[in-house]
Length: 334
Image (cartoon, rainbow, N blue to C red; front, side):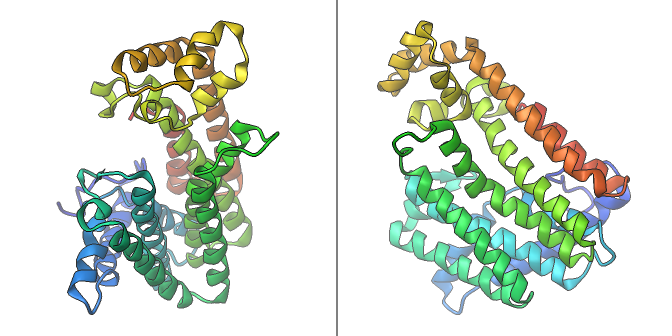
C-alpha cells in the first residue's frame, strides 16, 4: 500500500496535511522496524511480531499531527518521539495479553500463545527498554515525562486486576484505570508532538489535556460498543467484555442505579455469563437500560470537554482534524 492511499487513523480531510502525515508516518514505520531489531534473531522475531501484525498507529500519528501546531513539525525529534510512544504501546500489549490470557491480537496469535508467558513478558520489557533509549536522546525532561507516563500506565494495569477498596466508588475506580492505561500515553503523544514540533507552552498544555480526555473517552466508547453494537456494522462480537465479566461503563452505571427493578439484571451480572442464554438475556436487559444512554451522554460530554481544550490552537486543518476525532469518539459505531 502506498503512502498516498494509506488510510489514516485520524479523520484528516485536508489533502496537503494528510499527505504530509502519511509521508512522516512511513518514516516512523521504517524506523520502528529498525528499533525492534536485536543482535539476537529470536528477540528480533518476537519483538517485531505484534508490529508486523499491523495496527492503526494512532499514537504516533497523534504525535505527528500535534507537531503541526509548531514551527518544526518534520524534525527528527518528532519522528523519534512518535517511535517512543508506539514502542511503549506495543510493549504494554505484550504484557496485557499475558494478563488477559488472550490468544489473538490484531488477528494474529499473541506472543504468549506462541512462545509462552516468559518470552512475552521479556519481549515487552525489551520494547520498553528500546523506547527508553530513544527517550534519552530527547533530553532529560522527555525522560521525566516518559517515566511519569510509564508509572501511570503500569498503575492502571495493576489497578485493573484488583477490586475497588472498601468504600471506594467502583465507577471512579474504573475511570482511574482507563485514565492510566489509555489516557496517559495518548496525552503524552500529544504533548511530545507539540513540544518537539516547536509549539508554544500554552498549546502544548492544551493538547496534553485534550489527549488525556479524548483517549479515555475513546476507550469508554468501546465499552458502549460492547453492549450496543451490531456485529455486522461494527465487526465486533457484541457482549465480549460482558461475557468475560470485564467491568465496563454501562454495566457499572447500571449497577450504580440501585433500581429494585434491576434485580434480574444484577443476578445475571453476578453469575456465570458464559452460558449463551444468560448472556443473551443480560445483553438485552442492558440494551434497554437507561444506563446505556447515560454512558453515551458521559462520552459525548467528555468528547466536548476535549474539544474545549483546543480553543488556544489556531483554527485550521490541524484543529479541525482534532475536533473531528473528538466527534468520532462521541458517535462511533466501530
